[in-house]
Length: 109
Image 1 (cartoon, rainbow, N blue to C red):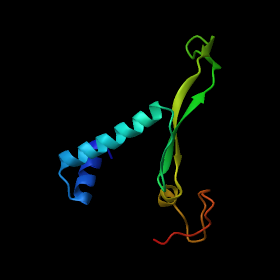
Image 2 (cartoon, one colour; image 1 turned 60 degrees about the horizontal axis):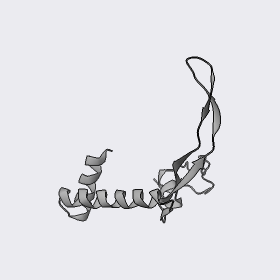
Image 3 (cartoon, rainbow, N blue to C red; image 1 turned 60 degrees about the vertical axis):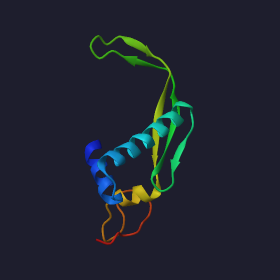
């Protein structure tokens, strides 16, 4: 699903115009980006949380020349999946869960 399809789905489910749904989505994404730029964590209960972590400096290798290079420290965005989202994606068998989500419950089909 791309952004256009997401906007269409939101508009349809909320009874909005596509223009209004796109503005709402754009606003939500901008607020999340601003919060992350300020090193804040954004938590959406059940869905997941966005946070900023620092990736330490390390030594890498240029794949073309084989020479070692220094890779600088940098900030990266991290996403931790929420329980409800994880369970909605988890494929479970009748005998129990084999996907490693630790729920141990079989999902009804």
